[in-house]
Length: 397
Image (cartoon, rainbow, N blue to C red; front, top):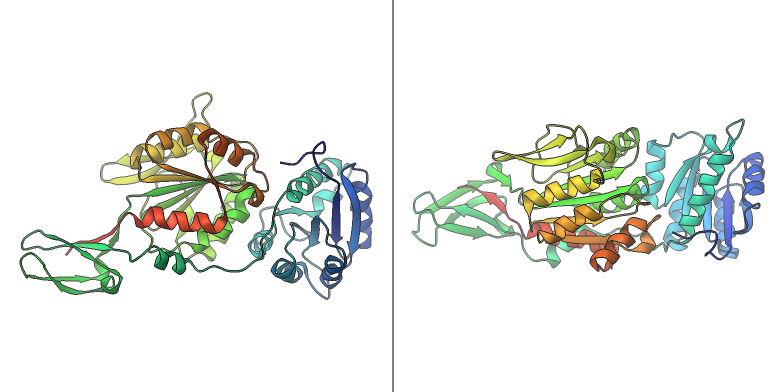
């Protein structure tokens, strides 16, 4: 993460329809030795004009403005002139859907305006804002363009299913063309094998854990909605953020993901083709219970062991080499021990590239410790597909 001692001076575009708010925040920012200048805009249209004439390093964008609101301006900006944008809102809570909308469009972080104006002393919140600006200035933002998960499926070849002949027990592999049900002739005994899609069962023989803090919400919004519910195996996300924020984020993520997304809670069964989201404070791990897998909430953790370590290690214990971990944006936090155990057991570890992390501390530490190449969001989606499609969908005849 850039700091005041190792960073070139930053130019900021402050976009807000309130002259009073702009005056207060500009005056505060200009007291920092790392801020070069603060340019103002009163609405989204003015902001786009300012970016064309003099692109800033970071944009602070109010979401509620006349003429052109912040979300609309954000979409135009990131399509044509991608820059790090921190969303501001007077109406939204820190865990509100409006901020998640901004992250989905392409903002890198968000902050409630109320905290910046709170009395008697808003200084602490304003220092938090300055820290967010410093972090955002080190990011590289790519133009926002959608990518279809199906393209990854095709590039990886056809998915396969297995059916078993009741007569002779011979196992036969199916390809995509037959996955929705039908009949084939057993290649061993010529018996007719009938199967239908209602009998489809997604094998849960691979699991990927994604870890990060609240700054990884944007990363997850670029990854999870691009995964298919037909993908075998399960996805588990552990987020170091307040439980109320993780609750809201999970509901938001579920509303736009083809992959079923639900909160990870004590005792829930883990099924293939599903995504489970846990807050790190909940101390959730994976347990094998007979023929099923369940999530379990631990009463306490051993000294020196963090909740991300526990989840990663527990998944690795169950799935061994058929497990993976993806380290996203996070400021500090645990995971080194868990990743070490997973790698030792033959699993795969991936880190998001530094330029796509608001806070790259954890990804850098893991990448350096285990000599891992950084990956873009698009590459991570493709890797998760390749990991999970190495396992199979199984349908019993």
